[in-house]
Amino acid sequence: MITRKDKEKMKEEIAEALKQAELVVVTNYRGLNVETINDLRRRLRNEQCLFRITKNTMNRLACRESGFEQLEEFFEGPTAIAYANEDPVAAAKVFRDFTKENETLVIKGGMLSGQLINPERIKELGEIPSREVLLSKVVGGFQAPISGLVGTLHGILSQLVYTVDAVRRQKESA
Image (cartoon, rainbow, N blue to C red):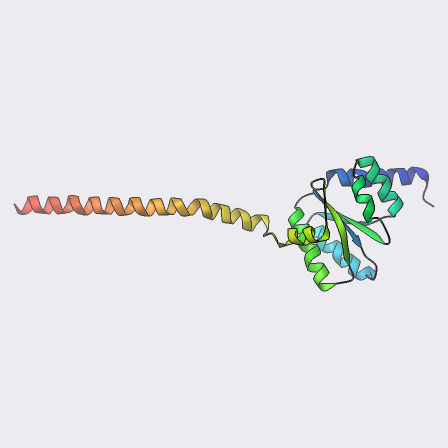
């Protein structure tokens, strides 16, 4: 039997997870079997995202304690919450891919950096390229003008060398 002290500790853990999370995704997992839920947990864990099934009452109390009362509207029926602390885009990608494979998982909504977002926004977040891809594009953007400048300077120097060489040959022949 769970004691009142255990419940209080659980509520504090949920409240702390809500405060620390960059992305919170609230889902309805009705219709998913244990194996499928564990598959989702594994995928999310690979992206440093925690997926927990807790009682709605506990979730509501934790939301009030942490100042995220706007999430309370999502706590109806079977509810599970994902907390992504590291990369919200990677976690959103997992949900995007998982909901394509398992239409029974329903995203109710969530929060991104403390702001309430709807399920469509979470799916849009999953469409953003990964951090590494975006960084490589930025580096490529910086590199392109530099490469162009190097090519231009090389061309100018080559012309200068050819001109000086032509002048040298002309003076030698004169």
